[in-house]
Length: 207
Image 1 (cartoon, rainbow, N blue to C red):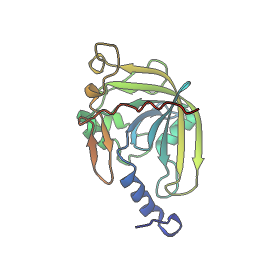
Image 2 (cartoon, rainbow, N blue to C red):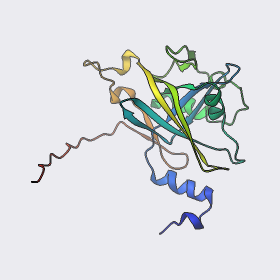
Image 3 (tube, helix red, strand yellow):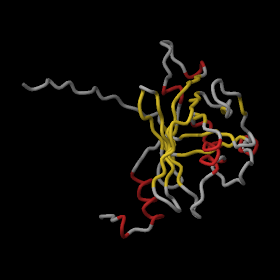
Image 4 (tube, helix red, strand yellow):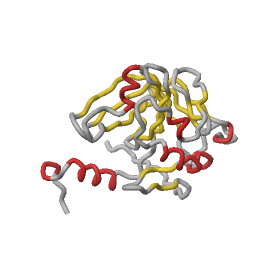
């Protein structure tokens, strides 16, 4: 099967992409409105960018009517956010926060979560999460226009806070203790408990 984007609807193209770009980590983003009302929403087009400077990026696609989602509106107004790591025990709460709530409705309240003050940015972190990545906005890159077009939000990491329960004896964040989940296609998610190791090959330069 060949899929030609020029002959495929935007919605179908989106479905093909989320089916094959898997598993995807989840950026559970807390932000603030101009009136200081917290917002919390998950996004699964998400990755690290660099360690020097420490940078992350996540993509927020527009709504079906082409308008911006609340997270984009908030970060444009208050250019800071927190990425809260989603462990499996928080999957239900994360999913609940994906609902299309009215602007400036507090998802922390609707999802039974506890907002906790961040150390370096204004938006709150999710107290129940084991790791929080506090970021200040570096840039928003708009890709396309209209429904399902993207807003790439690039953030500069200013602090990573890890609970003791997520840290090993060597002082490293332990993926096994985090027990994160990944987004698959449709309504499906993947666990990260089943892991395997591969040693990177050492290639002798020629010449």
